[in-house]
Image 1 (cartoon, rainbow, N blue to C red):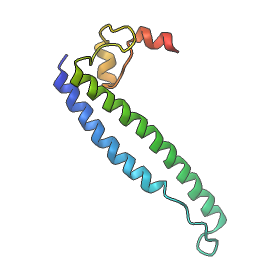
Image 2 (image 1 turned 135 degrees about the vertical axis):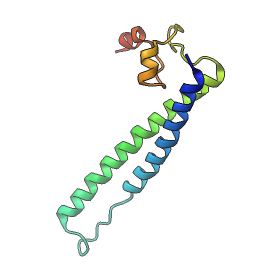
Image 3 (image 1 turned 135 degrees about the horizontal axis):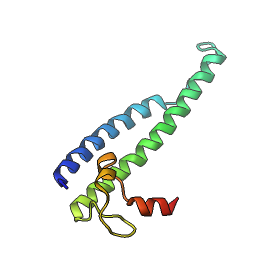
Image 4 (image 1 turned 90 degrees about the vertical axis):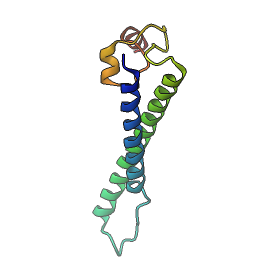
Length: 111
């Protein structure tokens, strides 16, 4: 496995995730509830959009933590090992998601 290739992918994903979090924070800003400016249906739509943005921000924050944990494992020399059984992670799993932490067997057992 080319660890530097995975590091580069993780760093790009980390940067993109941080940017997406910042955009989601702007979309999740408080909604103006002034009836004279915005109609009721528009306010409801704005509140729904705000809730969606908040959910997206939460998912992105979790993803950012996973990517940061993968980078820490790279630095410590444990990247590519299952966090449960410490066997090598399948290359196709790492290619699909470079922040994966469990091998296929352990992931199935955890479900």
